[in-house]
Amino acid sequence: MKTAESIQEIREQVNNLKSKGKKVAFVPTMGALHDGHLSLIRMAHKHADAIVVSIYVNPEQFAPHEDFGTYPRTIEADLKLCKEENVDVVFMPDTETMYGSGKKYFSIDIEELNVHLDGGSRPGYFQGIALVVNKLFNIVNPDIAVFGQKDYQQFRIIEQMVKEFNHPVELLMAPIGRAEDGLALSSRNAYLSQEERALAPSLYRALTYVAQQIENGVMEPALLISHQQEELEAKGFENDYLSVYSLDTLQPVDKLSTENKYVLAIAAYLGKTRLIDNLILEI
Ligand code: AMP
Image (cartoon, rainbow, N blue to C red; front, side, top):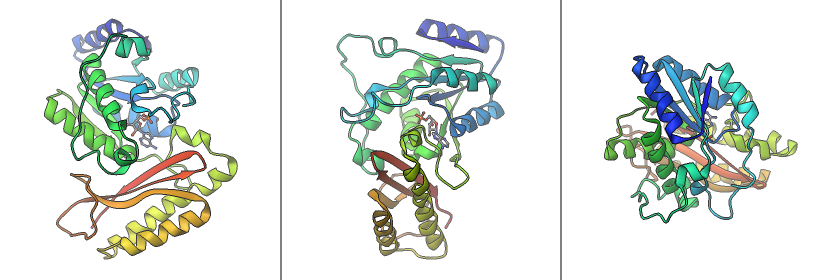
């Protein structure tokens, strides 16, 4: 396995792989790798001949009050896991490499797709993600890129960005990797105390309960949802959102129809830890 820290190095490595006729898949991450990330790498192997993983905690997607400083950084363990998963190249740039130091004149605006869900709660978050993914696609130049359904809004925004900016990359979405008790795997789960960790799967249980009711025919789930939110609050969660959104436009929907496709998404704080999860509804 090779590592690359500079743009020139990663471009040479990818050109080298492509010159051998290899199809290159890219898995961007912020490190602190867990089985969810590894499932993305495994999916990438099924669709490509060579895998590039990036590990970069992108400061542009953190608001000043958020956890950029304390975000888990476990580079040695990450490299070991990547090696075990037969990753070809790990790209690990620093912020000077990614952003340089000069004044910036450009940014990416996003319409509508980032108004709700995490975009509504975390202003600037998806602009930061769109910027770094746009740059990473230009730097790495992969044939395929794999993202997780865990961050469905991120996937949808990048899908639209690829379409509108004509990035020559095919996107794949990997299912959500979960712990045995249902909790969606996340690097931020490391913040949870033992007590919080025991409580955390309630989020997934609330989500699956609402999804089942909808799939059984409840087409106006507002009341059902507010009951679940009350129960979560009583257990100690601080709710952010729990709602049904159009899979395509990410606008909230009160009355569902069998004609359309939806995602049921949740975000809540447990202590200081923000947890998110979602299910794509089958109705
Ligand atoms: P992150 O390191 O959190 O920025 O995540 C990097 C990629 O891994 C993103 O495409 C995430 O959606 C994906 N990912 C994170 N957690 C999971 C999970 N539990 N299951 C599937 N994909 C995940």
